[in-house]
Length: 515
Image (cartoon, rainbow, N blue to C red; front, top):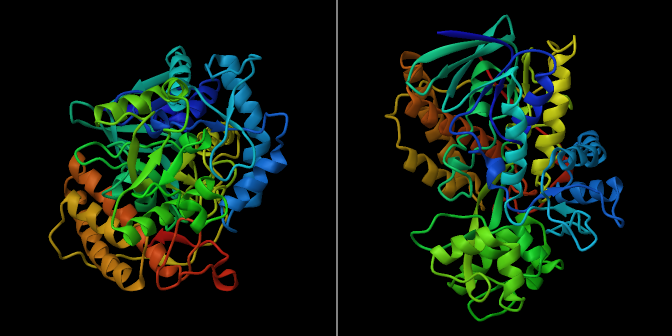
């Protein structure tokens, strides 16, 4: 079966939904979601969406905080777009009915998170992503120009003459369909499932990044992975994210002795940037041989349970009271700073192919994302990508050079299990990396990835093989980038190169598949 639309949007998170709403004003839109609607990284966002709308805030201050968190590698023009256009698009959400929490004067209540110098995070209790997604989905289903295909897996992009013409997808019955579209947007979210320990949902396997790379699009900055410092660490319980907003409201990190250890690692204490806190927790666990905890016991328990009802319930199910107990935490993979390389309007290196949100990389996050800038990124750059897709020049592709093509090895090894890949990635490309471990990992991943690509050519409709191939491809790109970058910066830490090296490495390096 073949479907046709003016625009194809792959992904049902904030970037894809916001883009689809704009695209529907210009033509027919096919919106492809991998699972059920609402199942995306957007729906799991607990902190909120950052925007400079407070009386003590400004886009300039928001930009300063974003650049500081990015550890010297942010693209300034991208940051400027994010912080100046962000308030307008957040205002749009409010006008559309997103129920952000309000203060006693009826204004949006603003929370503070790590590395923000002021309160600027709008929230809806501890499920702002779900609330934003609810409103965006409501508007999407009201648009007759948008056809939603849920439980449909994009398997590969369709390209001819260096242009993207849509994608092949697997429907819920297992049939392989082709969707023809004049313009295609990848908005598939992140790839946290590449790692054994992650806060991401099951669907976050990096399919969009992998498909774009396989089609010949450039990818960039994938060595920079953000490991969230505080995931619930209870045996048998899911690695559930314990939002940075908890620390923003006064929660403390303590060791087994009850000591607030973060001031020994960084002057910002519990509100240091995520990369700093994650590595400090790992160091503290290694130093003491005991767990690390998040404590809100000194706060008003009624406030804690009302402000964080979802987190409190998950902790309760795991046998802990968020308001009174010490909650065991440890880091987990959370966010990809890198992705499909784009300009500020979502254009990739393939004509008629666009990308936005976590699957894309404008360079706005640099080497480490500022908390709660992710929803804002999806909102702003999803809208900008849609505008570019509608424009007459939308076939124009990104004019940026890359470091050189990548050609895989022959691929002779038997394909690994998903658990083997995820465990190797966590052990050798996780919080702390070394050249020796990365070199061994890259060699394995090159062989496995080449083998998976070869097998997929004969089985294009195998959903499990698509998942494995995505994890292998993105894992290889992460590991290759980490091995190449001989310094430590932001979310990338090399034990054999523990310092930032601006002389040699204050630059970004892209990868492209040599077809």
